[in-house]
Length: 419
Image 1 (cartoon, rainbow, N blue to C red):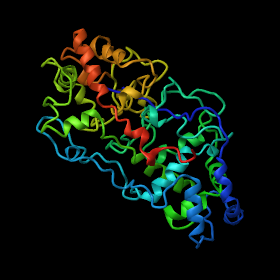
Image 2: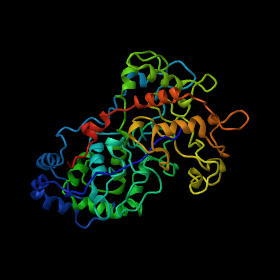
Image 3: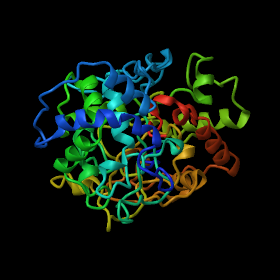
Image 4: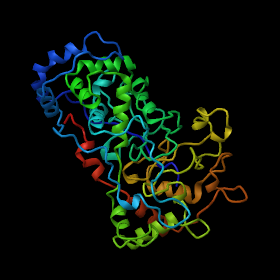
């Protein structure tokens, strides 16, 4: 299955920007404001706090532990790291897109977490990254298109951030216009619909908040606040968001191969899993060909066309980015299926409201677009038809629901520190 996911960011009803406990930082405010005065967007601060008191007070006010959560160890189970027998890779080996110059650190991702949830970083202080990427919705959004700071709608559906670290190609957005995650995380700030800021304006807002100098010091060794450091910290936080605590994972730990029947699955769930993994000639859906490895991410060399439309009219997808090669027209990035049951609606334009509609598309609705993915094309060039029965389609949905990992939404290290 290809391109089933989404991309959200809404924190609910408006509330005071800072809770009352932030007033405990008032005494520190004058100290930190001295550090913030008269700095350009990329000019480092010249003074570093030496007392441990700012650290203790800042962390307490932001619901941050005195010892940072463990972000650097992603903690994947052993079956994530070993290939099971078969033609396609099941391990995640070789697809981690973390650059050498930005490894995940505990303090760096902590700063990224605060940046991710801080609504002060939009022009009218109403929108944060989490407004369109909500943990309880698989770090996606329930709206077809997310609303920006002034109520305007984003162009595409909000893609999940889960397993963003696991995409070897390392490009981001549905059309893959961002070459790296470090590039991607800065673009929503500058988008005229989403957050309406400039990078200089973002850094100015950082310097207005009493909690950032100490967080930057912990993350980078000094209190310099720059857009590059924002990019690094946010990327570390996003890359830390991974999923491996679902019913599927519990069953996978009990068997040697993902194709084996899982003892904790129902008959329908095992049937759906078999359809997911089996090739089309063998009566399956070949879904694993596009959502590969135990992380169910794309192992393909780039964006794919999953036959949503016969022609591309209003949205050329990656064809707008890679304009020299017409093969990219109508192609979009394939996202993970982890927590897919939480990330409706589906596809880049949110056209499908339910997983049942998604399954029916692959069963009977694939269109003969000129750039249709070869995996969805018959030898004669026509779109594949799975011809699944009603029971088989229901079983496939049941299997995808086993990929739900509710701990992603409840794990304290990924939750809103301003609550």
